[in-house]
Amino acid sequence: LRSQHLAKIRIRSTMLRALPFLCASATAYMVTPGRMPTRSSSWSANSQQPLISMVSKQVPHGGTLVDLFVPDTEKADVAASADFTIELNDRQSCDVQLICNGGFSPLTGFLTEEEYNSVVSEMKLPSGLIFSLPVVMDTSDDKIVVGSKLLLTYQGTDMALMTVTSKWVPDKPLECLNCYGTATIEHPGVRMVAMERGTSYIGGSIQGLDVPVRDFPCATPAETREMLPDDADVVAFQCRNPVHRAHYELFTRALDAPNVDENAVVLVHPTCGPTQEEDIPGPVRFKTYEVLQDETKDTTAGKKTKWAYLPYSMHMAGPREAIHHMMIRKNFGCTHFIIGRDMAGSKSSVTGDDFYGAFEAQDLAKEKADELGVQAVPSLNLVYTAEEDYLVADEAKEKGYEVKKLSGTKFRKMLREGEEIPEWFAFKSVVEVLRAEWK
Image (tube, rainbow, N blue to C red):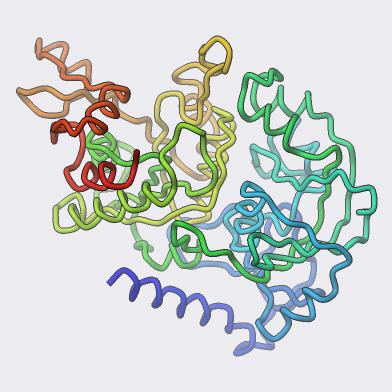
């Protein structure tokens, strides 16, 4: 059934892309703040797809949903026009996919120097539209200059053609201080900027060609919106690990938050790009999500829960990344976003100290919610008690209940040794996958 559903949304996406052919004389696509084509016709000068305004309760960031994929009949010619071929790493491939499918709307390419400086310093695009983390392409190749056309490939897939319009040497320490709150390589995001990225950044427009096969089937923003109600709040839940009972209680109870409408649904939207070394591998995580969907689909909560997967690579940038996630989920049709304690946080690789306060991400999300157009739903601090199942920690304390705990280290040890995992902690179907697949 799931494969049939994905086939249907691919068909609907194809029909959306065919609209310009059916309405060749159409003109008015909404202009989005940020870097947008200035033509009012349905096709841009480089024959890229139009910017499509979606019908949904939630408008895309800036007003329109970007779709940069060129028609199939033009892909070969576009690819052949390249001056250089660049093999993308895992992180870059996720960025290219989200630029092309509109997940990073209103962007139509990698940031230029002007846009990069504005995002780093002001957390905004030059237009004034909020944008919290720079989306950049890097290189150390002196032969790549302004005007170069780059074929961006990933594991055998021609993903896009990039036309370079800007090249500069970035101030990486300033970028790290502003975006990550620190410039020490004890932070994984700083390490990535300092040690993985090239000496120069390049910006410019993108023409989408194809998407790679990933461990997770990643629906586009347009496809995801097709799965969601257009007259109800959609509360997004971001994760990068298997969903256990506490997570499930957290995101299903988020529908009861005072700023969420009664007929709302949850979109569970795990990231499937590169994560941290200690995280569970992608294929295993995907299987845990699939079996959990099957186990819960007929329950009251399950009927209000939708699932999709996001090709995104975590920066562990704390508060700024929380805003980034909210913006992305806005493009996928979400009106609300669950913000957990120390969301997208990380610890020093030397001292183990947290880089961000427990509530910094929540505070910034609430501060920027109206400007961003996505409301923050702070996550509940839930604990398990034998007397009343899951409760808010303060309520359990007031009632004098004993709180049951199971650490991640203990859980992994129990898995390895074949011990029984209590069902108050983890779903049986998820445990079975982890026992079979994860060593």
